[in-house]
Length: 64
Image (cartoon, rainbow, N blue to C red; front, side, top):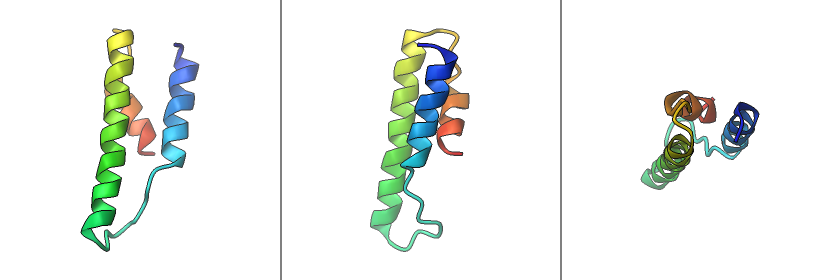
């Protein structure tokens, strides 16, 4: 994969981010936390494929 692919993937994940602002329920908090975990796991997979991949930067881009 190329940097362009990583950027596109992070942007796609960012568009489906659940955003509850102030968490009104424990369930909304859990949903947002699961989404963040998903971004981290995707980052781990991409990092395993490419040693130069910046996992922290990817996850931050997902959360933007």
